[in-house]
Length: 255
Image 1 (cartoon, rainbow, N blue to C red):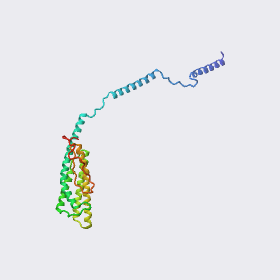
Image 2: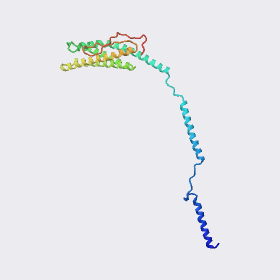
Image 3: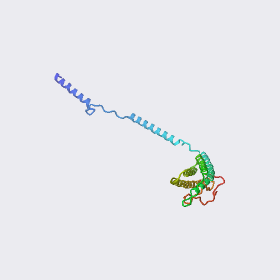
Image 4: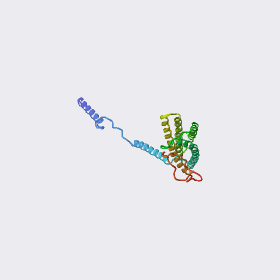
């Protein structure tokens, strides 16, 4: 083969080799991406299996774990019985205190009713200064007793608070009456009118508290308790119910 023919054959062979090197990839010259072989699927399956096992363990723990212990029924019953017994005792003490306060306040109220008669009744001579001072001392002592009473059940507290407010109103009535005795003319008349109004409010407030005391006394087993102050006509004070005193009492009061 002569020189030119040999050169042409070499060039043709080079082109054929170049075409062979690039033809397997579709003519792009780029390597094909690696395929997902059996190893990749085995790894994914292993991870999924671990997650399933972990979820099963958590579910087993949740389902088999014992719930936290609740309150002991016996202890709860013991505490409730203790509270009930305390309430019965406090109601009994409040009844006794209210009876004593009633006995102390009736003379004060009767004196005020005489000095400050109901509307339309003829006025009367007022008591002396010493007597009014005794009223003030008595009412203040009763008010102090209710102020220091222990707190208890809601019904007890409502009754005690109402009695305390009533006594404080009565104390204000006595105080204003004292001021009226030292005043003259129109000022004295206005103060006497205010004292009478406060007296009426006190009796009305006491009647509400006495009604509440009657209710809680029955609930606690002490029976009906009617400890009402005397009321002037038109005072709109509540009156006791028709049940006799002590009705519905139990031998061993319980709340």
